[in-house]
Length: 262
Image 1 (cartoon, rainbow, N blue to C red):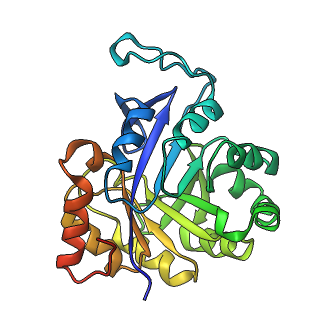
Image 2: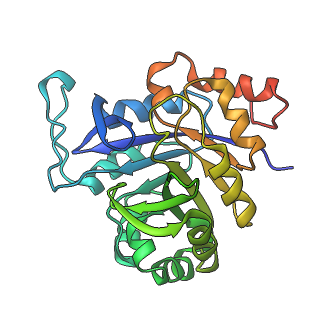
């Protein structure tokens, strides 16, 4: 039986780590390099970096972080990968197989593709043919609408697509996705736990692993994602604001009878 993975998700905006709330409010919390060094000492299974920068400004040369500007996202990825000793997924601004190749050459093990994959599903197919399905993670951002359905949004949660999350998940799998990173826009940063209906629906609609994300405020909420069908449970903010988040998260899963690597 495969072990359930526990995955931190780090959000990178203009070269700095940020916390997010409902994809609309972002607060600077740290430096991308220091966090990787910390996670290497922790008991995490994988690491996901998502670059949510909306412009071309990458400047971590802030006096309070005592770190010089490293340039663009690939320079940051390359520096991060040198001290990252766990599988690393990188997402953001990936629009072609050439972009994928550059990300892999900079040290990533997988790519997470979102808006461009939705607009051009064949990008998933081409990427899988070149780099393998296991390296293609399709990130899906969905919001629960008033009628109860979960609509897919792109462009960092700003553009509604009119497509239901399960429909897009099935299509992404058919085009070669090896994994789905599932995020809830309305649960993001709230601490209310995963949108379990969303996780369950997508997990039942597909045969590839689903990574549940968005909404974790307590370690005990991880098990709910597993019970809903997730093959991995992920979170962002809790890793920055809870002590020993790796051990406490794994212990909470183990106490619930979930098969995890301790």
